[in-house]
Length: 496
Image (cartoon, rainbow, N blue to C red):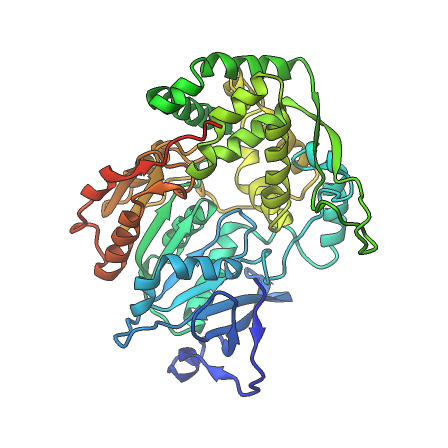
């Protein structure tokens, strides 16, 4: 979502410029309009040293969006949203977050900072796939030649070893100070939970509350356990189908069909005809209505098929189609599975700042995975070890940053923390939330029935919105009535 600045030339000063701290960094906000946001937003940029340790050399600009509180009773503590990925843009998520947290926004400003290397903050963008070639989307997760080219391109304008989570969380604290806030509330999902925990470790005095959705702690060396987590989630969803009368009646042999699909793909790729990427039917490049080919034949591998199922497990709205798509594939129709694989490659894998993703994971995750260990854990799983192998190869081509000693130790802190985990989350399972909570004495871990990495498509999730709103308002987990969580339900499975 691109911001549209107003024509006003007078910059509005933030609280920071009215404070008494002469050393406080300067950040000026300008009124701006953002599609999907009711009321005026404020946008600005803060310049920081790329090398925070030396405070010398190149400076980079960090993009900040503030949505002022809408109510008359404004609280001094804002809600900072930290995006996932790593590599997603927090400011682009602003409309969706504002829609989720209207009650929180009544009392608190909502603050969005694009993390260094992503969005509007000196992005480390890479081009990994060719929209004109459908088959390019069915290859490596990180195409190695493209990784080399991206490194060469980015190194002319960035030190790729200076975009890690600890450095970025010091950026966030500088933005906090520049905006004049003392204590802040934080919401982080997926990778954003790791970043939030690192902020808690580095700046505990400025944390009022933290809400974590899908905990990815510093000692979850991704993608080490992806195959195991995916297998657990897949078997959970298949079991729910078996227990659902309509789903079981439609697919009575689903487990056998799942095994058959995997066995077929292990023999080699299957050729499938799919709709081309971004190819609307009946159009042409000249703008005429002359028919042009809108389909293409591609080879679907086990890796891409498994990846598609994995990403469907991320969200209950997509997971409800897994039994149907597996059944279709078992009967020889792999087109729906291939089309899903393409859509996830286009709309998830190819988006965001993949250079930032590599800078973070190649320093914080891959070096700590022992050779062969993750591959052994992936044996006999639907996902297999392709992601680990391919990410390891990509990191061999990327500069490795240094991270602080003890970085992977569990994060400890006394701040109130609300943890939400989907029951069938394929990437950050409930065990992660339990492990993190052990070191956070004022935390509460809620496991969301039928949930995935997200909760879209479930009935009754307004319960979670109410709990998060109450938690931020009261600043404690002690008075939360979580009984409504038991009423959250899946909306059935797609059977035709």
